[in-house]
Image (cartoon, rainbow, N blue to C red; front, top):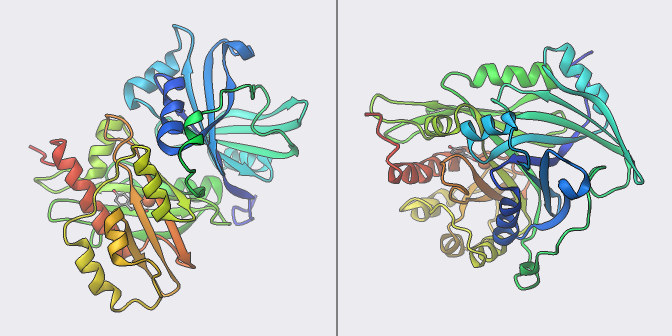
Length: 380
Ligand SMILES: O=C(O)C(=O)Cc1ccc(O)cc1
Ligand SMILES: [Fe+2]
């Protein structure tokens, strides 16, 4: 099979986290981010092994899974290494069998052969492969013969989260990109896996000549499917003699490679940040002097930025631009005690290609400040 054929990826279908307490994790995302309970699978639906709470906001669907048994070693091992962490990324695809078989003949390890799941709403075809990102698996979900909201086997008899009746919803759309942190000098090799196994291409790249502070840096290659429906920046640490890169901190605390953040597209980032702050979300502050430098950078900006700099400063939003458009972005602080996972909100205006060089360094510096507070910057 020619890997150059369009294999039919259509973005992220849902993301599954393995966590210590699925009920409470789901509730955190509902309370803090305004997700709403969608579906449940567990003891009451006949699932004797795992409880999964599914929450949704617009096109972002998150699943939180914990075991209900006392002897689930897979989950225990995952928890020991990674803590609460992403276990699976499920893609919406045109043809689950095609993508699965293409991956397998190109060397991917199978986790689940294409399987039909049927209920009163029709049939979904699911298949799953292992990835080089530690224990993260990829699932390919084909829904063309299914009209249900989520998946067969789930109950929709869930409790409406009342907080959303009091706080306005954030205006998000879908997942823009998912970032993987890998070990030193592993970005090339990991990207190769995406090209070979999934027919992805190199979308963009940046190295530590651009992304660095006086302490440390990172290299990154962004890979994407033919449709650019999801982008996967793969980042690796560039450590110095005295300092640990924040990507090194990530792999150390994550017990190896894993998902360091994903970015959610928002229609209005100012409204998003304002609402999330009301809900108690805490964001990483922008570096000192960021906005005075930004004013200088904007003197050469070929596109019209609608937002006032003062407003961006008030909300702590990063801005970058190219010839075709601009992007606004912001990052939460870690959503758990391990410094392993954060969430980004991003708004693109015009046709900006994304991942501007302009912001990477400032974001890196902002996160490094947090890393310093954790006592994780110095190598000695
Ligand atoms: O541009 C983006 O979306 C980023 O997320 C940039 C980024 C990613 C990882 C880092 O450790 C620092 C910066
Ligand atoms: Fe990002």
